[in-house]
Image (cartoon, rainbow, N blue to C red; front, side):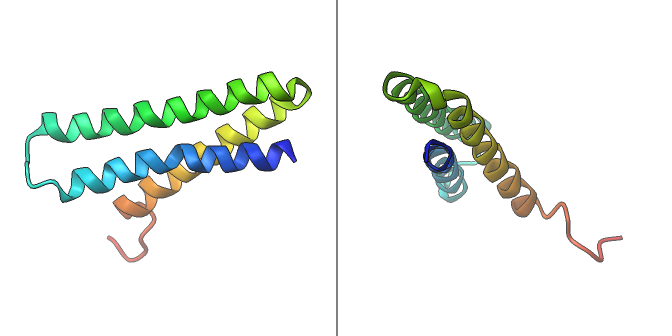
Length: 96
């Protein structure tokens, strides 16, 4: 049960990062500073969501903290890597 909750929190932690990428892409400014601030804001909010989830798990169910943390990290990193790979077209076939 805690592993599933960790996976859910990991996915919810990726959501602000995803939204900040979308907002930065739709913003009309081409300034690197404004795009960087969107990214920094998304990363900050994502880390807050992940840390709050870990703290709540530590307070409520200390026995399952390790499984929760591992599931949270794997899902968060997996979602981030999948998004970057898909967005940048790294695995496209036929590019030579």
